[in-house]
Image (cartoon, rainbow, N blue to C red; front, side, top):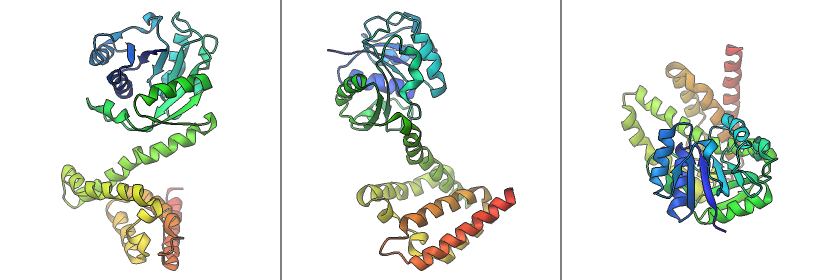
Length: 300
């Protein structure tokens, strides 16, 4: 059976998903967005067979409907869809939230049991080539088993790797994704902020630090997290860590809590490696712990 696909939400993910599916020959029939101009633009990128529709006019031929809308909007969209004719017992309704389970769409159960969540483990920048990032990646699936089977068959067209997740684990799963993506951006921003303090413009700082960040990510891929760790904590350089703390206290105190929290995480990561000087790493742990206690008392 050829799936007839609709997408509600023509933002980064919705537009990218529509284009990627269209590029592999899937039948993307309908695009819907509360902003008609965005919906029309997305539909136009998919070719003449993809049309824009208001939500109340979605075509009856749809067999899969993806909801690529903000998390807080999902219950509202589900209630709207529960009232319209095209949703039948054969229609899969899948949202793409990483944080929420499929049961956020429970208002649709009287119309179809085929509700699911489908989340790409990927970040999209909003560029015109975002759709290419959806090939050959991992997708998490959760929800009705029949819906998941059909979604897996669809994702195979994108060379997607699929894994299922229990709905009770969606919160932790999404936290992992946030640390790997959003917080990585925050850490890089902190590094460029420090470089700006010594006179480098942001763009120059980014260019200087980017190879270091990319090499670290590549090391993690090749050797795992613990063995990829380098730097003063891994070497047990107590004095260097102490000077880092002093520099932040004088120049960028707003970054100190992050430095301490990440430092504590890193000491836990490397303390049991055979190459680690455990006595010195323990000293660093104690130093970090003491500074964290001082910060807590200062703010309480």
